[in-house]
Length: 324
Image (tube, rainbow, N blue to C red):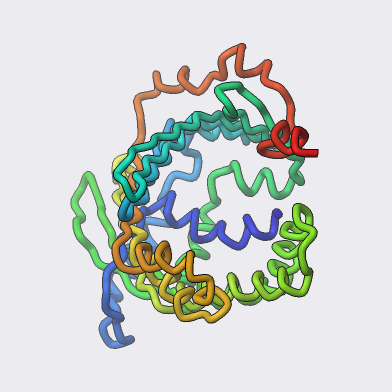
């Protein structure tokens, strides 16, 4: 699955560094703020790429009768990533009965393995996934100045919200066409890997799985091309480190859902249409990034009882074994 993760890395990196605010309207070439573009380049040239602070990320998704929230804190230190978080879901049914599901987790990754500790039936379990050295290093290390500069290739416009001796806040408009083009170049490899993953746990029709994979890629492509993405980024100019970031991905999720609604293979699934309509017209998808006091580092240590968790190869492994 490494290529799938790499395909979304540019988007995720942009969110983590800058935050995202989606707004309507497209700027023509004549409206591009050259001063803002130059200020972005200057900021990227100075930004600290040796940041080992503890960060806190909060992402939530809400639509009628559903609310999901992912919270985690993390630290990248000596090419080693540590995360501690919780994924929680609140739902209501047609009779307004309320349900809540909470799933705490820990994650560690070095240049050899990624280990996920999670709870199933209130019992801790862990999954270990080997990763290539190149992929691990690329994932857990802070981007270099050269890599950050390369990100400007995907910038369409920049607005300067604030700039003084202490702080700078920029609103960066991403060229979604170029992002979609980049993903499209890898689409055949992505389709192959996605289809292989679907066939692993399925005895179904491979031709249908292939069609589903192509449909998903098509919806993602159209969703990106019809969304305007702005990244908000506040930097402390005294040490050139990110101060805060915020994101609103509602427009992107709505655009992808709209693309799905206009795709026969998906829209023909009547039971799925209500969910897509809720996402397309009523959903919100937002996130916030802040940085914590250095003392918070101690909270990332994995408790001894969690370290002794049972090793499994897949989620719901025990449940699948019972059905056999």
